[in-house]
Amino acid sequence: MSGRYELRFSGAGGQGLILAGVIMAEAAAIYDGKQAVQSQSYGPEARGGASKSEVIISDGPVDYPKATVVDALLALTQEACDKYSHDLKEGGVLLVDSDLVKRLPQGNFKTVSFPIINTAKNEVGREIVANIVALGAMVALTGVVTKESAEKAVLSRVPEAFIELNKKAFQTGYDKALAASK
Amino acid sequence: MAKKVAFMQGNEAAAQGALYAGCTFFGGYPITPSTEVAEVMSIELPKINGKFIQMEDEIGAMASIIGASLTGAKVLTSTSGPGLSLKQELIGYACIAETPCVIINVMRGGPSTGMPTGPSQSDVMCAKWGTHGDHAAICLVPASVQELFEETVRAFNLAEKYRMPVMIMPDEIIAHMRERIVFPEPGELEVINRTAPSVPPEQYKPYDTKFGDVPPLAAFGSGYRFHVTGLNKAEDGFPTTKAALVQAEEERQVRKVDANIDDIVTFEEYMLADAEVVIVAFGSTSRSARFAVNEARKAGIKAGMFRIKTFWPFPDKQIKALAGKVKAFITPEMNLGMCTGEVKRCAEGKVPVVGIFRVDGEPINPGQILDKIKEVK
Image (cartoon, rainbow over all chains, first blue to last red; front, side, top):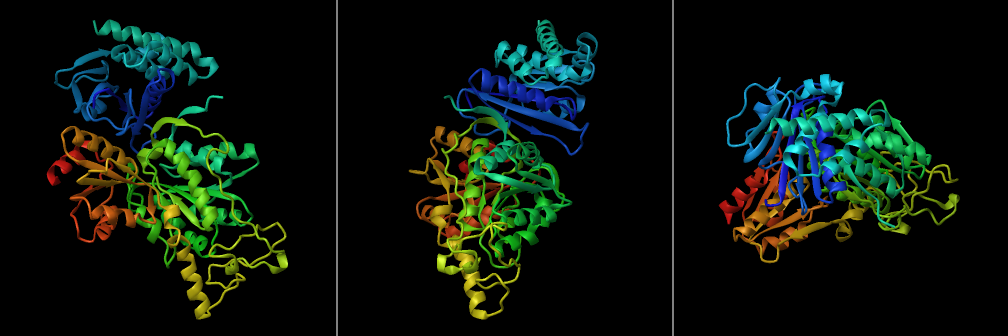
């Protein structure tokens, strides 16, 4: 299991968490030259319902594509936090939206919280980029991919007209997470 | 020139594999978790002057690819469990009319509507026994995004070579996961095209065994005319009830695959040289098994894996040989014992076959397999 870093992005269907996971994996696999696998699990609903996207990053081949013990977990809803925090590793990282997740799991891990969705809405300007705010925060907290690679991966997924918006979302999430974890 | 590399989803890779193989017609009806195959084909086929058609249902979709194949096109449809059930009548038609076609069935929970977004491996029996009557079956079960691309190319090759439907059955995990893929250059992978008739139209018979067990198939629109039916047929394609002809025709259709098993069956042997406990696994479950084997080896247990890449025809010969050498088989699968039953048949009572079954929409994790290895060693 050494050399295997496991991330889980969770929340409600429609929050863009699968995309956040895909971008994280692309940052590792395409720009950082590591191996990565991204998988997802979601309900039959088009919107709502607990949804998760998992990313395994490794220096060697990734066999089992799902999480075994999670190194870093993002939870954007209380339901997702309740459902998906059971296998968070001792010493791992938990990032939650402080407005939406009030009951935190007990355990020996580092919990960081700030109002992720509210930040997207009011500071960046569009709620729709909450997933990129969260991604910036996860990159800052885990260090599992370089900031440069993650930014490149974000921008390669975004249409021209929205590049500045997403850059801002990524940087804001990155800075807020560092400030909140002090 | 550096090879083209992408970070891609399994379903997208399957569609790219089909295009690499020369597929020019897709007829389908969207269904989770296979829809991305159709999406990519709908974008890419018009660019190469191919045809994409979304039919009124899965039965129509299956009929459309049979018709298109008879015009000489390489054809594809994709679906999932409930759609596969609907296609079965026409899959039988493709078998008896000996029409090359490729069917991608992404396995989700079943029966019926089951669990649309949950992974499963419970359609593998449907690949062989879904349509009625004696018939040959080929079913491939890839375990990575790269392999899904390559096995899709191979599925087209087998369909064309043996003039029959070929199925690819990735489970939902393989179909939806994303990983790195290195695209083969054109010409790097073998691409097989069906044999065209060597006789003029007036002498052509669509099932003329003078040319072997796989008679050449003419394309409609190329000047050749022939009769196509779901009834047992004679060499000229017209229905017959003559006992000797029907018997010979049925046996030939099954023999096409039975006599060529070594050409069709593929598998991977992982750490089998000194293995005492052997996991027999396929699809995403084999990735959990590999993880578990590695962990078991670290703990000094002689574990190995036989990975099935071709589920039908089943690798009887290989499993029978292993049964004479090992202490136990473990068969993890996301169903209630389909592969396990086949392994037991091949093991012929020589060694225990211990299944691990899951049908709750969750994958079998490496820990479950490792626990079982420790239990049976």
